Image 1: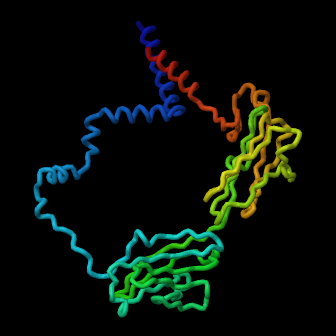
Image 2: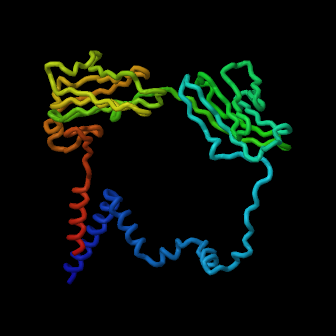
Image 3: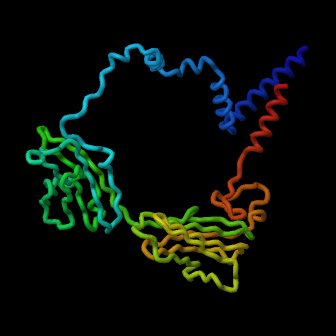
Length: 323
C-alpha cells in the first residue's frame, strides 16, 4: 500500500511540473482554452452584460419615448468637422487646408473667418485677404460657399504643424487642423538582411511611398553594378506596379552563392534603399538544431519555424502522467 501511495504521489508531482511547463511553453493553447471556457459560461455572460440593457428594454416597450426631446437645429455658426480634416501634403506639392463653416449666412459682414499659424502665432488670412509677406500662402473663398481654404504652395517640412481656423464670434470659435508635410520614401520589405535557401527564388520587394507621381523608372543594383535582365545567368526578372504606392519586385530564380551580396533599389524620384542577401544551404549549416534565421526565405516565401510539435509532445507526456 505504501509503495502504491508513493507511486501515486510521484505521478502527481511529475504531472504538476509538466502542467507548469506546458503553461509556460504553450501559453497560446492555455489562452485559447480559457476563451472557449468563457464562451460557454452563463455566469460570464451575465457579468459582462451591458448596463444599458434595461434602457434598451424600456425603449422597445415604448416607455418614456414620448418624453424624449428632439434636437433643435443650430442657429449660430459652427464647423463642419467632416469637411475640415487634417492634411498630409507632399513635399513641394501645393497643399490645401479646408475649413467649412455652417450657418455663417449673411453675417460675413460682421464675422470673419481667419487662418492662424500656431508655430509663431502668425495671422495668415482674414476673409478673402492674405496678411503675410510669404507669397506661398493664399486665402481661397468662393461667393456663397461655406469653405474657407488656406493654400500653401511649395510646402516644406518646417510648414508642418497646427493651423487654426477661427471665427470672429464673441468669444471666438476655433478649429485646429494639423498639416503633415512628407517626402517620398523607399522601403525594401524584409530588410536590412535576408537569408535565402540555395536553389529557391529570391523575391525582393521595393515600395515607394508618398510620391507625388509614380517614378519614371526603378532600377536595381547588385554590389554596385546595375542588374542586367538579359545576362547569361538568366532567370532574372522585374515586375513594377505603378500607382499612389509604387511597388517593384525583383525575382531571381535558382539562387546560388554568387547571388549573395548587397541589392539596391533606385527609384527616379526618391532615395535609394539597400538590403543584404545571404544565399546558403540551410540544411548543412543548421543540420541538428533546426534553427533558421528569422528572415529566411524557402521556396520564395518567408519561413518561420514553430514549436507546435514540442507542445504536442509535452501534452502527451502530461496525459500519460495523469492517467
